[in-house]
Image (cartoon, rainbow over all chains, first blue to last red; front, top):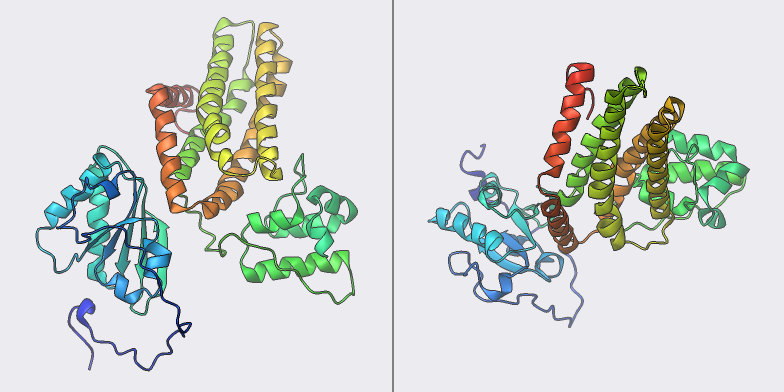
Length: 155
Length: 265
């Protein structure tokens, strides 16, 4: 039977797939340098956003992307959000605009999952940068359900 | 073979002319380059061929340099893996490519401008001086200054490819000085020669930058460096205020006058 619901809710089971071996005893350091991280909770003018390279990640990304901390979070200030489930997304737009205009961020990298609804976060970020009086370079990357980078481009 | 990778391409082509033809087939146009100091290994890296094409190219070059010998093909180091061939630039580099489009529109007008040039006419002298003003202030002070004072500084200034770019900027400036001297002397021959030489030089120069240099540079930049470049280019844009729009209108005016509309870019 064909699945007919939302692609973002479709069930997949990857248990049979090979997983990368971890080096025994090696503890991976967190690259998170701030709190909070949820976009409703952060202040766009918090000191860690001033002039920063900002990572705006969809909630699910950090679970799917095995090397999230080293590959994307390292050296960046972060905010997370879900374009499918979060309410009050007009507030998100204003906060991203404030990051561009007031915090004068250096770049904005948007990390989303491959499911179609996740594209909403990129669209929101693009709209915020478009409306901002101060433009910043915006990059995006799309992560597959099994943590591969499918696409990475400057928008 | 390893030693050939560290030789200048001009020397390799001089000793083995067939290598120039092979590079041509892979759209690496080193044979007609006026300088040719770049090392063979840098050329292979900078052109970002797919691994398959790179293996094929190296095998064919090896076949010319050491025919019949079984040799181990050296891998050329890459900053980042080869991506798709479609050119996608980072936002600051895209700004430079957009500026190139206006410069190319100016270059496309030069043959029309030279066609009926009469330096005894004040109007024609004004026209050439207007084109020189565009070249000096838009192409050179505004655009080339971004490259020389900002972009190129992110790389080792001793890199051969950057030396070539600097040298071509200088050659362009010399042509412009000669054009001005020609106008002063009312010497149409000199103006024609140097304006046309400038057009040829810049056409090839821009092609190299758009298709080879800029994509290679983009592959080398970190996300943070891209943001910094964008911001520094923005400062230059602010310093020049409305001047770029003024020069855009100037080129559009010439296109309407000579060609009844836009002809390039």
